[in-house]
Image (cartoon, rainbow, N blue to C red):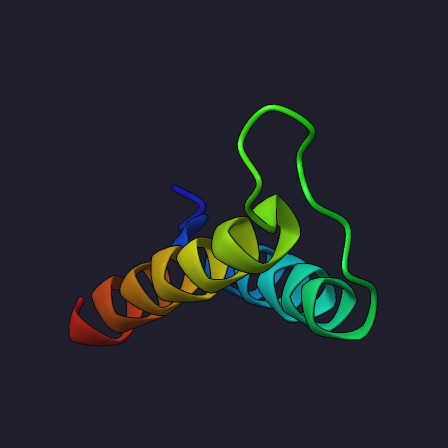
Length: 59
């Protein structure tokens, strides 16, 4: 079987880096929330990708 944890971890890590960079460089705030969703979702994606990579390494 093909283990998808490593490619998924790299994907979410790269996505998180791009979103975090966008959130830090451009100050786009959500109209109803007054928070930078790109920054928050980018940090979450980096953590999620890190968990996937940790699980792939453990196995």
